[in-house]
Image (cartoon, rainbow, N blue to C red):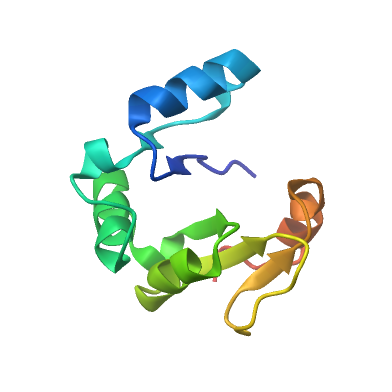
Length: 115
């Protein structure tokens, strides 16, 4: 199965492009969402509402991965599924959890992304 991969960062999209190009993985990503692209700071649900709208997604179609639980709360409040990626588990049961991105494919195998 194919999944579109985008970034959603507090960094400007041009900075994101530079980071990903330097790592040699820019071609793996679609849109690099920074505040400059959606005209909203990554500081409230409005940021994700604009990202989802720009991407042509209903929030229910999105899976948001971040290391910040508050950020995930914003995405989840709109209806997105969320994954906290950090060693410590989330305080909220609404988020999936992986301790590192190396474990992400295991998590994906157990999530019904179609329903």
